[in-house]
Amino acid sequence: MVPDVSTGSDTRGLIVYLFGPGRRDEHTDPHIVAAWDMAGAPDPGRDPAATYSQLAKRLDTHVDLRTRELGGKKPPQHVWHCPVRTAPGDRYLTDTEWAEVARRIVHATGIAPEGDEKACRWIAVRHADDHIHIMATTVRADGRRPRTHRDGHRAQAECRKIEAEFGLRRLKSGDLTAPPTPTGAERAKAERQGQTITARHWLREQAYAVAAAVRTEADYFTVLQSLGIKVTTRLGPETGDVIGYSLAVPGDANAAGEPIWYGGSKLAPDLSINRLRERLPDQDVVDRPRYMSDPADPWRHTTTAIHAARTALDSDDDAAAQGHLAAFGDVLYDIAGATTGPHRLELRTAAVAFNRARRSTIRADHLAATTLRKAAKELAYASNEPGGLAIALLFATVHLARAAAKWHEQRGHEQQAAAAEEALRHLQAGYQQAATPVLADLARRAPRATTAHRYEQAVRAALPNHTARILADPTWTALTTTLAHAETAGHNPRRLLAEVGAQRELDSTERPAEVLNWRITAQPNRRTQAARMRSTRTTPPAPQPTPTPTPTPMSKQATERGRHR
Image (cartoon, rainbow, N blue to C red; front, side):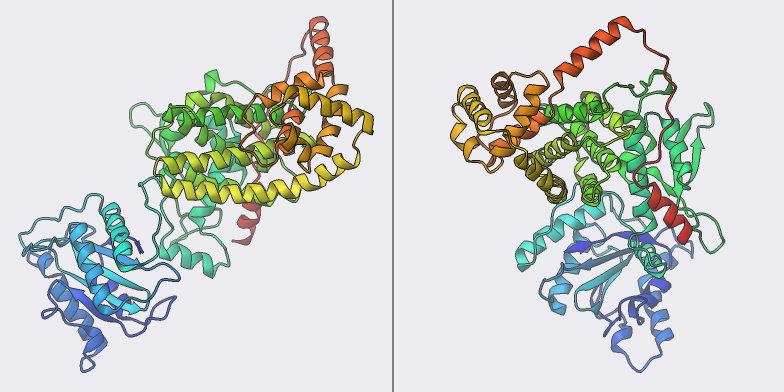
């Protein structure tokens, strides 16, 4: 059961809508199921003798009576509106049941506490099988305003109780950290324009993708503008510093032809200017991307940082763990941007899904996740996708997403846990698409039997407690090829197996050979490292140009949306 509290100032207009034919969904048999006074509230849906406009005017007069008693000076946003809808698949409630729902919600939110004779006037209108609309005037009989602080949160909490008592689908409890939902008008506009998502949703994903890739606040605004997005900043009156910003979709305008602006915090809580600054360093102290001789380094560094993030989730430091989850949200966007294969869509969808899991009521310690965030930004500037190493990184994200879901679940973060689970499903699908042909190719190029037997002996010596499961794993043959590559790169197979096996326990994994395969893939080439160190000692480093932030993975979508508007 989903309540959606909002406020407005047009009592008559809302009444006309509630009893009218509907703008998108057909309104069938609109009528009042509950009110502050069922005997005193005229019901346009049950009085066929009067004309429609007369009934609307009469009801408006009754509901708004208290504001007229103030001498015609209506307070701002005095109309309180709360549609309440059952979840898809739920049974249809009777009028009597909906009346109870309405009375409980106006009591819980402070609109009309039970037994309060001076409470606000309100009505509940049903014009469809699966929902009602509760409308109230937020002026009490004594002239005071009702206590409606956190009314949306209180309405949700009451709906959770009603679901349990009525036998309805139990929805996830929120914690007020979710991004603002698009309004009905925004959704209707997107449908008219043939868009699958609203302007607010689209801008939010652009902002997340850009914030994940850039290194400074200035770069953030520069890249957004390069994607065609309109940017305006709000400056402090004394210092002239940026204290806020708003974005607008290219070509999205109101009736007057003016851009429709969305403030950063109205897109998502962690996109406000202050929250962004916690994740983006100051311009004067920023570290620019490292230029590395090995193009695989960004992928390897990110994989290592993700393994460290899993350790953070196992610690007792919730703030550090939350900081790593916020950084992991950036990692997913940057991986999707650096990926070129057909699984890229699954990775991008996973990044979008994980946004709800990247924040909770626990304040994040972003400094604790500096290594992970820096590694992700290196990945945003990566110039290629190094085959198996990229899949090793993707494999690591699958395990971190699973750990994130468990972490949120243990702390009662229901919506975040569900979001992490959704991201996990997309990451698993993307991993399977990318890994299946690579593992098959590794198995096809397996070393000869004598070499494979030598690696089997190495497994028995290094990981005796897991040998049987490793050798029975279908990925064992592919692992022998990976061990051969590692040996060629300068690693001792037995020592390497012991090292990667100790990185994290193998008891809980169903396919230990697959886990070892990708852990070994992420190890550096020792021969290349040695050659690089010799070269560094003899050759002074050449000066490197300052890089320009590149468009994020959403840039093509930005261009296309701007063209189609």
